Image 1: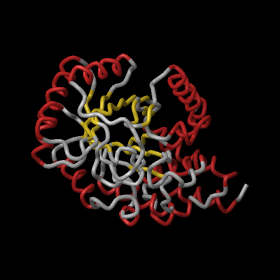
Image 2: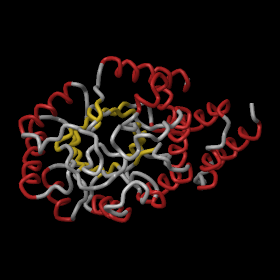
Image 3: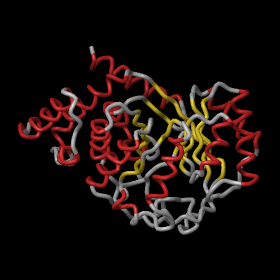
Amino acid sequence: MDSTSCQHIDSISDKIISGTPITRDDAIALFDIPDPEVMHLFALANSIRAKLGNTVDLCSISNARCGMCGEDCSFCTQSIHNNTNITTHPLLEQDELVDLAHLMQESDAGRFCIVTSGGDVDGQDLQDILATIRRIIKETQLSICASLESLSREKAEALKDAGVSRIHHNLETSESYFGNICTTHTYEDRLETVRIALATGFDVCCGGIIGMGESVADRVDMAFEIKGLDVDSVPLNILVPVEGTKLENIPPIRPLDVLKTIAIFRLILPDKTIRVAGGREANLRDIQALATHGRGKWSYHRDYTALKCAITSPLLCLMRAALRMHWFMLK
């Protein structure tokens, strides 16, 4: 075992235990830990995660309006600037969304998130979504999240009045790398939507995507930006390159680098729920359970907008196995 790497991890552990936050330089240096020593890093992250408890948080996502988006995000299958040949559709009918909500409640999800593509939601689409949200709240016990592109203060208040409890809006990456991913809106635009959601009193879910060609410093900078916003929940997506997008030929991120990133996010964000979301299955495959060592709550999403993931029996078995692993480790 590399004693220098272990000493570095131990020194950071001592800092965190004493209440001193990890620094940007500390976090970047942790990415250089040799692969044989990563379990030492995972153990530190897991000791922090354990303070949040061994709880399971099942979150479901509905792709309520798909495709036709004028933004040029290079990773996105729903952008008109990418040639992915996905099946697009306008806003789903109210009955279909309500039926999906009931199905997700039967699958033990606690939260239902309505996600739209195709630019800002306003006019009749917004009114239809507000009516749908009210009906879902009336007919189920689900908490409602909305991810509707950018927010104005008026739209945020309307969603709040309808019963939405959480807004989802990702930063995607660091400010310095954002221009490599999107040019049709700015990083400040994304920050402003998050700020409006927070000011309106919503819980906020805000994270990003790793594996888009960014540096480890970009990942750390994104984590510290999120830390500064003081959001409640941090989804980490791992890029799945899709043919027809500008990132279709990007090399996949190594599974151990995904796990390192999750662990380091936990050290930077010790009291937040970290969600390993889109791309989890494709990139982590048989070692998904290890991702729980660095997270807060378990969180699984049914429908990754244009990518699919079901809350299935194998997935539930995986969660149970991981929870047993935590029990064993913490005894």
